[in-house]
Image (cartoon, rainbow, N blue to C red; front, side, top):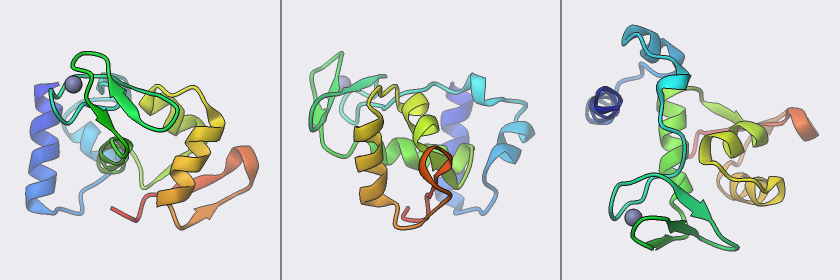
Length: 125
Ligand SMILES: [Zn+2]
């Protein structure tokens, strides 16, 4: 996991266009090597859980309304520029399809496909 964190910091500092699964392959990692879930901005632990209208840290109790944005940024840097509702729920550990739709619709202005096949573009970051 330290390797992934170093990689993320390197990408952000260098503003490199080298994105997506190719970067995982370069470091001989797969998506399964990544820690899934929303990270707490206060204690840096995983995961935060989604409550009715905010994220809550299981360890320190910190609450955030937009902690999913950092998770989406990680997803964009490490996996893909687009994400489906199912992929978002799997990556963040969220159960509600409706809440996932609401959060993605708020931040992703562009999407392609319909209903279950819809992909949201992560170009807001
Ligand atoms: Zn915390």
